[in-house]
Amino acid sequence: MGTDHDKPDVRSALRRAVKAGMVVTEIHKGHRWGTLSCPECEASMAVYCTPKSPSVIANRIREFTRRHIGCEEGETA
Image (cartoon, rainbow, N blue to C red; front, side, top):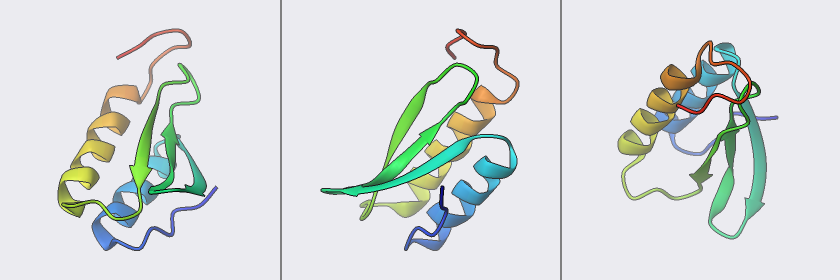
């Protein structure tokens, strides 16, 4: 589990997600850097190595985290 993404905006959003209880898994497969997952409902999103707009990806990570804070198992947001 890591949050050492090359892009500062993305790295910061991933660290906040981990503090909120999300799970970050580094994969480094192709363009995929890793995944962000909700441990409760098992929803996930891909995080890529070289996003065209790091701030947009950081916002998506924050939105994913916000939607999944406190979700219950089996619930999808």
